[in-house]
Image (cartoon, each protein chain N blue to C red):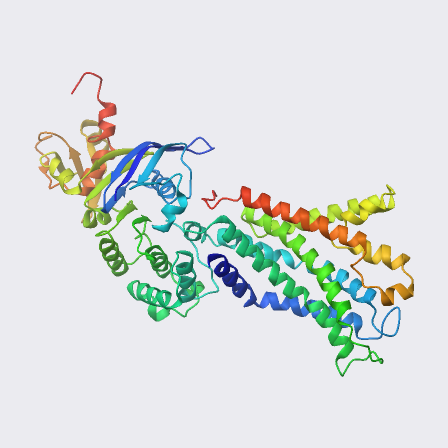
Length: 263
Length: 303
């Protein structure tokens, strides 16, 4: 009951904010803009294009996500409402779990703007693509489910944890620096150390995997027909990042205190 | 139900010792904790509200170990901190309903009743749909009072509650507290002597982390009968007076400075006997004329 209410309240609080819908609108517009003319590797939209657009717009989203995750994690401390909340009979699991889930669902909702933007570009009557694409839900669902959502989970978990432990919304942006560092490490592994398998695993946003590896090595036929996200390297990457994120959330649960914050 | 505090100490990482071996027995009813700013009141309140860990000691609320059974304490706790904020972008009714769920008021119908009743009691019903960002300090304080009163707490901890209230709000709030004090332990921390004198049947005076005096206000006042003397004093003569007498307080009265002096017998012809009040008790304890600080100052072997 309390978990559900904490989730509901947080979700509704942020869903009512203009910021949330502005993020949605920006991603929708970018995805729409990238696809309003006919496909890059073929006339109809390909699974690879949808995956690439998902990954590239995701790079824009990662700078929006800290506001959502950080606010869910640290608003009580920043607004100084925390003594009222922390003195209530709630468990750490309900509090952190409800808040994290709300942030994740909000971010998932914002990221849903990408497939919706592509769909709008492809299927709206005023589309300028000049071709009639067949509706293939699988290419949108696989990109959203296997590429966007795990990325949302990983980034939200890290940003949320950092903000919760430090009690500051802005700290969640530092989580992105961590991801940038890991991405650079992945690129080094792939290009300099000749360890492509490790490089693919370390790639949190999947830009290296999709844009560089698949973009350079896949044939046009593969790009037009193969669903991105079902390859073993991407599945392994997703599992690693979901595992790391889950471990970070457990660590946050252990370290977090429903107690007084000095300063 | 009684709140038993034994040997509570707290030193902050910067070396400030906020509480020194604090021991209090707080029965059902209104209990005042009186002390100057920085005395350690808020630290003690936070420890009792399960938000801070002491370095040592124990706190027992009836059968509940407050330091170990935090969930049990929070089930029955009402806490109004000295400083708190609110989410700016929700209204009072919505946020109070949220707190009601967190406090365990499960059914929607029960919550509606509780929320309406508390918003009416705290005089916020007419502005219940206004965003909290538009509330004044006093309105926000009253909202905090409503949150603290949710769930009929058996232990109510209120830290400097009247600081931001206008006189009418203060009276309304103190009346609310005294109603609650009929069935619960209510600990009122304040630096305003009138809050304690008007409401509390028992009190303690705290300064620099130490409990200086634990007493019943009326009895403590009674024990000062014949020991408080007053005289008018010019600003130039004030230092001389303090050197020669046990001055416990000086204050301006109708544009003149009046000093209160503690003395077992008349300190001189310029002095008149004063009718002691709780402020005299407070200043006598803080300046070491009565209570524990006097005991510390007394040379060993002397009564």
